[in-house]
Length: 401
Image (cartoon, rainbow, N blue to C red):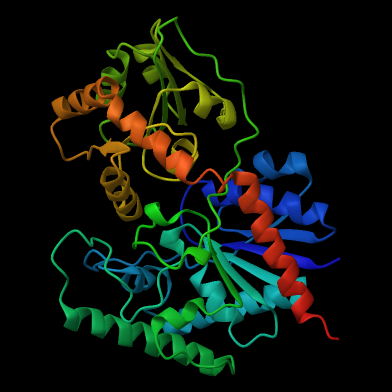
């Protein structure tokens, strides 16, 4: 039995746990011991406890970093997580090393975990880097700009930040007696790299086809959907209650000629009472997405993992991005013609108009169905098995002959 550490360090919400759950179940079915090392444990027992899966808290950089301009690429994002402070970065890296020593993993699987990757450099443990395309940046110098649809950022700034992160990371590696890096992208050195997505939705643009295994999400657990009213069109909304125009969005949804089912974690009771109608209902529990995605006609979300879930079933999207990665994903979906985006900076009246356009133009649904058909072989189960197969191969190659 091999011990396999599944590591999540950066990012919010629970998409990473949702990705790890089916992977861990498959690895355990193959006789391994999966142990998750997680950024956020607040819902770990709710999601993982029923499956008796092990989990630990990840070492994290906690001090807020202020006064920096908006990040141009992932190199600059690393400044927010300790890469501006070699002593602090070394502390986090040593904590990761100590955790690895205690756990004695036979394989390390990283999902959006740059500091853990730094700490693992030089260890004689095979590594597999995975995650969505944003979590696996291309091996370029400098790392590509986030907002690729705008004029290129100043090359001198990108070169300066590349050097600064590289110098700070290498000072940590010297202290750990680990091999130095020649470029920031070397942080993602691994024996295998697998993107849990498809080329058309890669936020950085398509890469070699063998890099992609398809999206992995937990879609087979949750409450059964109960659609309000009897309207023929069904709209599902997966929302954050802290979304700035949350009230305006609920109002726009309630005015559509659709049966609307909303899941918004932590939604206030006052919102439910104010907006629940004969054709709009709130679910208090996460829903069984395998059912939801096949029963709905349109989905509304913030351009996170729900994009893969819905486009995998051929459903068009209204996307409400709230941060950089979501903006990048939104752009790709709009390029494919499978949905439209709305930003909180736009006039509220445009929200209802955009919803109406999606509901009234079947072209979006046709293109979404074509996307699903194109990637029919990239099913959730197939992706899980492909990743587990890679784990088995890495374990076999690491065993002494």
